[in-house]
Image (tube, rainbow, N blue to C red; front, side, top):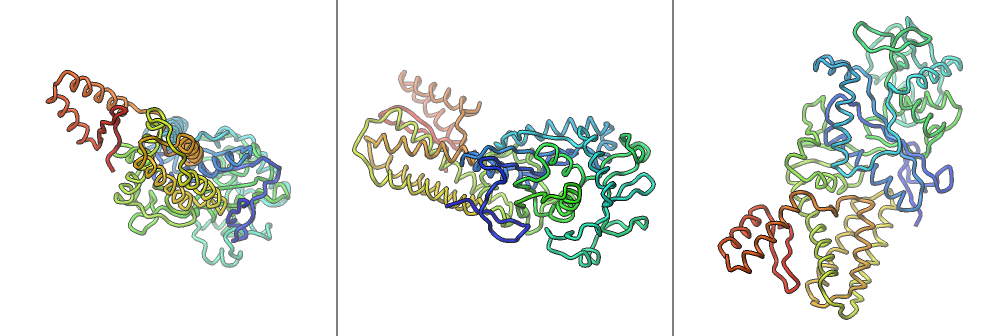
Length: 466
């Protein structure tokens, strides 16, 4: 089955056929780096990371670009509050982004362009729009004239009249049309500024993504991703300015994730109902949040709650424990009779993951197939002292394969797990020397941390309590 994706431009599922065979150009709107990013922001970062990984696992060469917005009104306001320069603020929160995104298992993009590092490209882009009659200048500001682009509204599926009547845009009587949007802003006292043909100023928000995606991916790109809140006006404006500048289709497939909700309201900093990834990391393994964010289809809203995270933790621990039990069995158990049931279950799960992911990146469906494999592995290990090593090797390869895509199995031990191993060594030594009081003390200590010890003929091992 070929990969099909829901294209927000056409509002239907379409077979994914990149412009260049075997290669995919992929642009995702990144954060405005004025604060730690919240778990609503984390949803697109994690989802599009998985989509990219899946494309790579399917044999595509993916060029993945995610920008940093490091100059805008929010950046300037926050920098003043913190008594920093805008550049200092950006450096602080770009570093914080990398730390939190790395903890979530998000692979680094191939390129992270920054608006302030691409000023020449942005100015040149604005020049082209003016020369082609799509932009005009007023007192050092440059505006895009939406009436010059007949297809304006084609992404949000609204006519120009509808957009004008429903526009929630600051009224500027100097503009030809209320929907006209700024490409270049004239400087104000105390703000960062750059020289331009229109005077000193700084870029508008929308223009940066068009300029940067064009520089690194060309005039036309295969996939552009972001949250559904960006459809209008940001992505609508990107289409208008990009297609007017190049005369070519800007994006072939538009993908947008639905909101993350709290108590059925969209999570946002403006509503004050947000929680940062940094907050979550203080209480949970961040891979639990990653699993939670993948547990619903990307086009469906997902409601955040402590109960939801707890369920994700239990699910992830089942997978982790299964992976650990599988490796322990391969290291310690003898080869037994062939188990065709396990072999068939792994093959079925593998086919199922591919089928569900090929159906518009259905991560929730894929997780169901992964758990079918986990159940089959657990049944085999519980029923057989001597195991089907070949089938278990296939099972391990399957789990490694899906982890390369989903990235939530922690294959390398962290400091906490190394500490557990050391406590178990101490307990085993206490048992050998008949120091049963210390042995019981260590067992109780680990149990209080949710760690269960199992003494098997092959040795002592531990797993997380579910």
